[in-house]
Image 1 (spheres, chains in turn blue, brown):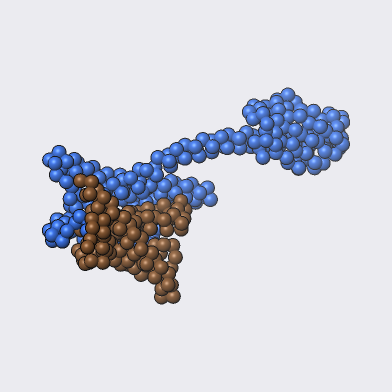
Image 2 (cartoon, one colour):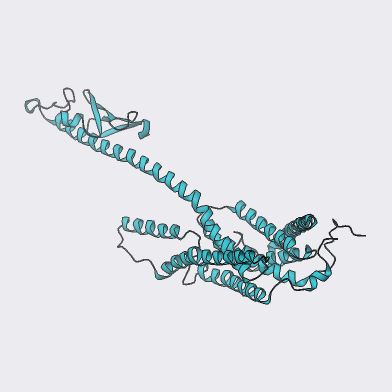
Length: 257
Length: 137
């Protein structure tokens, strides 16, 4: 037979305090989940605000939404009070209350151990386990999330730097196209091409900038422009200035692709 | 005659452990699940991970009851898990990301039976663990 006996089972395994707290916690959980869930997500005044172990994600979401709203021409708005309380509540629960429960429960277990007593199913056990679940559910995923965040941030910075260089070079190419167009429409008497790109050359300050180096291959009706990035050696752009001075046939090479 | 390694799960149901087991499932499974659902809503968890969490969480608590309780406590956490999953299925239709209705009674049956079986097996393992530990001491 299993070592536990009927005699053992007759003595209570739970303290009255433990049962009371467990029932209270059960009732509170059911109330929270089945009642508040409906208020939070079924059209109540707190719709959309929910608990999360990572409140900063909610805060970041608000910041991004606000930025997009302003980008769309809207006036800066205030974060709704319900949303502010939701984030504050999440912070307090996950990073103040839960760790406090966990460490108080831990302290109690250590004290019992020092007195050579075994921990029993008590309020302290409940606090220790529940606090531990909440604390570690927030802390453990935060470590890989922090590493991933750093990696993503690094990649974003690199991608943004490439995009900035590309944007500046496109700007330079527009300047070249504008100059080529001016040259083409001007008569020979005014040092122009008289309807042709042949003879067009780049001034030094346009041919070499902080962003890239530009070379041209002018012909009668079009002017091919080759742009080589100064920052990224394998990044380049090839584009054609058509007979109307417009940039056409964009081709991006290397990191600009 | 019983020997020390025999475990009889259907001997007598301890209804206190059924009630306590239900409360433990609610407090230690539903509460963290509800809090972590915030992650699911950000798209970081999918249906599969939710399913794994459901059954793994039940298994951990079922194992704990089997291991921690005095005597043989196997059917008790199973009944608790059955009632617990039934509670979820009937009252929290959005919990698993799908809507339950009378038409989906078969699905509810699968969930509750699954919860029962998982808790039963894990509590059995917990009892074996407890027996082995006590045999050593």
